Length: 306
Image (cartoon, rainbow, N blue to C red):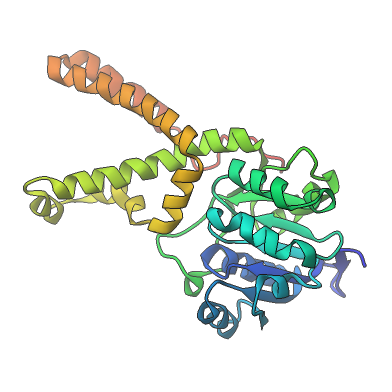
């Protein structure tokens, strides 16, 4: 049976979506697929049966599966929405249960480790249908109860196909993400991990360090009590899920550490200007940062396959 079908409204879609990980991202993907009429039946499972049942009660999935293997059986599209550290064990659990030609995607925030895991456990026919993906979307709160169909509207998703991924699989993945409202960008796994170490992973690390450092100082509690919008905006991502960010920072450690070194050098330059009292040079450095940041708009300058 072909993986892609047409409904009576002539809408391209899939017969059966297997969702592994019914959290914010996985749940939002399921709801977006449902909204776009791209999935006739959605089967889901999570590490916790309570979460899976909650997803079913909320109408995120149609059917709760007892295991990842059960969730993917007979599916023509599969989304793996688990922490990156669990990718290999998840792919290993489902490999023998995937339908021939089923499109398989993940949503991990790192890609080099995901690709390496896939190469270790998936045979060539399965690798041809595997399209790693990273939707650039999320919330400060996690959990299926916060999932929403509009989460990916207007947001970018980065696809990082392997050298053995079939072009047809990449096209199908691109069509799916476009159909649920995303803008599609294609990168190599290495380029992805370097870019996101710089603009996502390192900023999270800095936010964690900033908040911990502030709290550890004498008078830290008093400072927090009078903090305003600047603290709110700079520290927002420090409220992120600790387990998820532990995995991301460890999985992409080499790239994160390389960018951290560059940040240290830039910070040291500013510290030296402050210490020396060199006002004109300090103002020039601040102006340079302003001129880079001021015209920036989310997703406005990123090459897209759309």
